[in-house]
Image: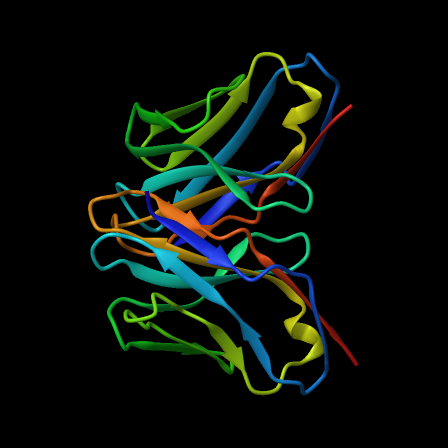
Length: 112
Length: 112
């Protein structure tokens, strides 16, 4: 079946550092890909998405590019802030399915 | 615009007591609805989803049940809570099978 694999956390960075959270997927066909963010004690918020190969999703300084050849959707940010501390989930949605497939999440802590 | 509500926000219940968590969506019609559980420090587990009134799909056999009495209302229930039912319960909705899901603020359940 379809699956999503994220890099193991937790990730700890200093403010203004560069962030990469790796995400790879296994799926038949052409899924849509998502990154969600969960701040402490809150629900998940959609951070960005891409629906076809080579699409780049971006939001709040975060970016991710849908790479079909490497089945990857890595999340990047050039300069993280303390307020970016959260858990980040990669997910995919497959045509014909009502369900999202989530990765296990990566906890990011940014220190001042 | 669409909004999703969950209540209560927090709940402390004794083992063996019943449970009812409610989720409602405003500003859309005929959404797909989802219940997830997130145990402490772990990822998301899909419990139930519904594509229409009275239509419930169960993902994990357990002592929980779900109902959808109205188009935009989704209820999670249990007749007798277990310690292992503790966790953060999230409701979500989507309009299409390939689209992103939008999450509610969650309910923190502690079973003592």
